[in-house]
Length: 330
Image 1 (tube, rainbow, N blue to C red):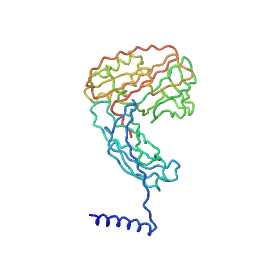
Image 2 (image 1 turned 180 degrees about the vertical axis):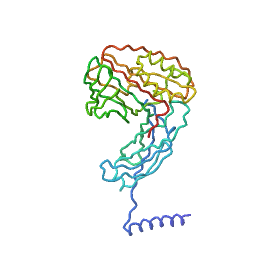
Image 3 (image 1 turned 30 degrees about the horizontal axis):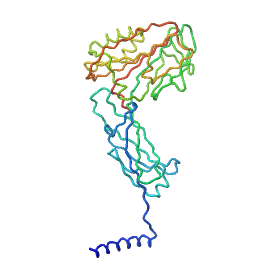
Image 4 (image 1 turned 90 degrees about the vertical axis):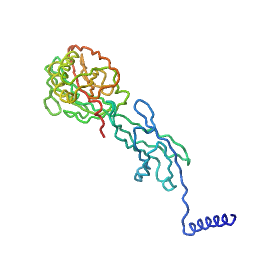
């Protein structure tokens, strides 16, 4: 036994000697251990769960070296080793999540969008780090349109402060809209002198699942959706032209299935994601946003009580909506 140990030890020494004589040295290594958490917009931490894999790469904050892919991980813990040469080149780890597709069992089931996350490489080897990756549901705000009714011809400036990203605007929004508005609702875009009936925008915003879960609303059969919208929109405060625009856009989508779940959001800045700065300020403003789904909630839904809006003087009216469960955009 002692002879075998002696032979083994001599073999190791011979190997080290060979490396030295060939001008090579065993490179020191730097070990990084970590735990990955997925932080939703509602502040809830998850360990993997709805996520499939994530990529780990080395990142140089100075931009001298290109990002270097290391590995794809499937577990919510990782253990990686890099040598001193790489440690001298790179300052951070970067994590990219590969979200798996989720079978939609409820209308709030979305494929999530996760932001790439950087974490500075710890100076001490074998350090345990905790990486929080922010992941959100994405919701599409479809065709919010703005009607403007001043008491007399007025030049109006509008800025839209949006916690999301515009995907389309018409006329082109750029850093705001500036229009000449007439009492009958006609608008002239002062940048290019084009005429419009309303100002149009669409966008994508982040939402948490909990925020998208409604406990009030309406469950409506497809054959009565048009009459339901006519009655409800009139009660809320849309005029016949605005209601016609709303119904001809949304009803063809809503009647595709036997029933719809419908919830209205009135003057809540679309879940506090969309804020209008209008100069001069209107005397009355109505913002109607409809959320609907063909997937009926499996919990008790109370009938939603809706306010009745009355216009007074110079008024601004907006309507828009989204199909819950259709907002996964990548």
